[in-house]
Image (cartoon, rainbow, N blue to C red; front, side, top):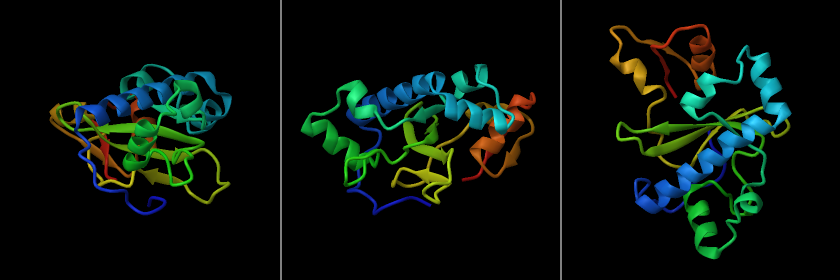
Length: 170
């Protein structure tokens, strides 16, 4: 389930959009390391910050993306709205969410998944308003056997127990 109407279709693999998506996921990834609330949420889910979060670029949206990265020019704001990172009001779609990028086999980010750490807005899961695409944990597909679970957080939980050939359906 996602919020709001789908934006004008964008070519997600366009280098300008990819550069922006990699910048944003990198920023969210670094924010996770600096924030107490998302770390506590993940610990309650039996996930510890570390190698697993580094490998999958797990991040956190604290809502300060535009200020911290100085992304206030009109062209960038328009791109962020087209992607669905920002809503029509200019606020971040993934505010107070754990954020995980999904990739295609070429390493392009083709979707973002968000899991709210609160129930304030009634929303638990959100995605960019783009076609659901991408792979979580492409490494699982080189194994002889794959375990599939429901969600990304579930996958991370199993991976933290040592299972590496885990992926999920979205």
